[in-house]
Amino acid sequence: MSKRCAWCGDDPLYVKYHDEEWGKPCHDERMLFELLILEGAQAGLSWITVLRKRESYRKAFHNFDVKKIARYTEKDVERLMNDPGIVRNRLKINATITNARAYLKLKKEFGGLDAYLWRFVDGRPLRSMLRSGEVPAKTAISDALSIDLARRGFKFVGSTICYAYMQAIGMVNDHIGGCPSR
Image 1: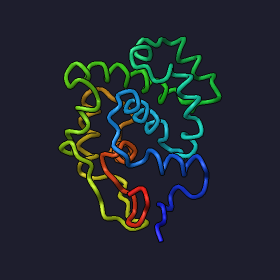
Image 2 (image 1 turned 90 degrees about the vertical axis):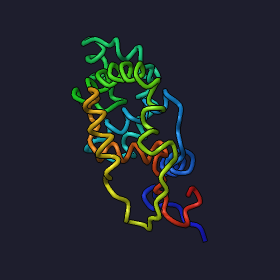
Image 3 (image 1 turned 120 degrees about the horizontal axis):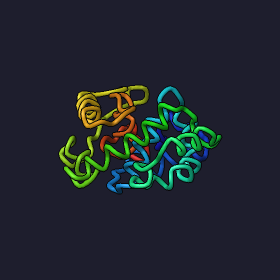
């Protein structure tokens, strides 16, 4: 009998995310940026907390329009600090703006996050052979990605965040053996 990964429990929003997104290769630029920001917003929180705020994030950050976010001013930061629908952490809000600006520079060099990110795994998802409870918090690849993103000016991109991001966008498939989404 197939059994989905235990981490998503039975919360309908979590189950939908697990079944439809997590671990599936993503090549959409807007979605790649969105998930990078949301993974950074998760730092110190649970993923379900951020997932429940996802629609509010989309509204607050102009559907993750990188060019608009890159032009945000202190007035926008104050607007966001007063938005109860998102994580109201000044460092994380400022990191989103910084990351939008860093993304625009990265886009000039690589064409976008898709081309940049997937080169870390030779363009193919890494498939692990995990059993429940064996998922690593970080790997040598997430370490390298973290260092390179930070060098390029990105914030909230530590190795653990990068590994969770790699899982989210399908660079690594950590669905446990027997999971229907594997």
